[in-house]
Image 1 (cartoon, rainbow, N blue to C red):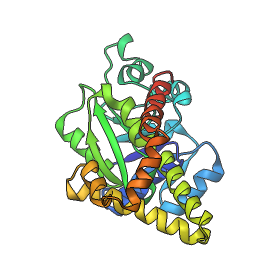
Image 2 (cartoon, rainbow, N blue to C red):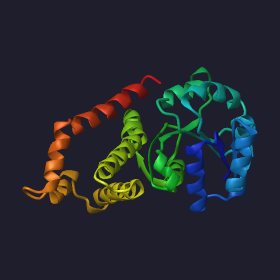
Image 3 (cartoon, rainbow, N blue to C red):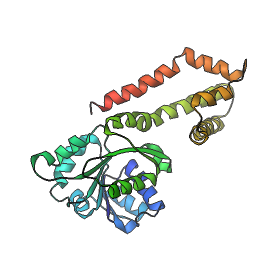
Image 4 (tube, one colour):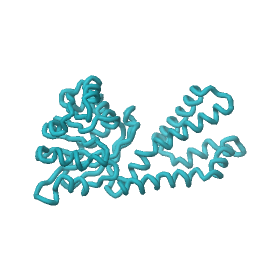
Amino acid sequence: MKLGFIGLGNMASAMIGGILKEGIVAPQDITGSAKTEKTAEKKAAEFGMETCTDNRRVAEQADVLVLAVKPQFFPEVIAEIRDVLREGTLVVSVAAGKSIKYIEEQFGVYESERRIKLVRCMPNTPALVLAGCTGFCINDQVNKEEKDLAEKLFSSFGKAIEVPERLMDTVGSVSGSSPAFVFMFIEALADGAVAEGMPRGQALEFAAQAVYGSAKLVLESGLHPEELKDMVCSPGGTTIQGVRTLEKGGMRGNVMDAVIACVEKTRKL
């Protein structure tokens, strides 16, 4: 299987790293194109893969082609490669806000009898440490074997979850954007500890490990977050006073509003 990447930024690098670590394909079976020679050379050295600055070259070789460019560049990139894309190539889109129908239109599906096999996915940045969560959906040209292959690729750098396309914009917000919110929360926890005299490096380590462990507990215990919160909040204790302070500041409502704002922005892309 020949795997191609158009775009070699952070997300593509995370995907390639996971795929190679799991041994799904060998480095010599991956090709990728970058906008600059400098980036192409860097990624060739990092992964031992073939790289170039020619998108068409990557597209015409690939059995699975990952479009890992920003959404605003999709029209020009697809216009460049669509006449060299081989029939049967599985196309994977990593673009936020670009629907299956939109991408099919860019490939000229509705202007001719041509069809493409398309997977739309939304990974998140924790994929960089093989702890990502990728939502994905498929078009009606993708068969079960191809869907299983896509899921296997996505699972190499974290968890992969199939969702109906109508939820993909929500996936991009609750999973794709939310690491930024979590990083802010970790920083705020550390700031509070620093204010009480703890050194910055140590405060960040305590805060980050607490968030990591709490997330792992949610995933592995099977308990609802509310139950886990109540386990920490002893009657008349310190934690419930902290929860009270967060509730007074509207923490839950603000987080919900942030997710909804991300979804609304995605739908305008």
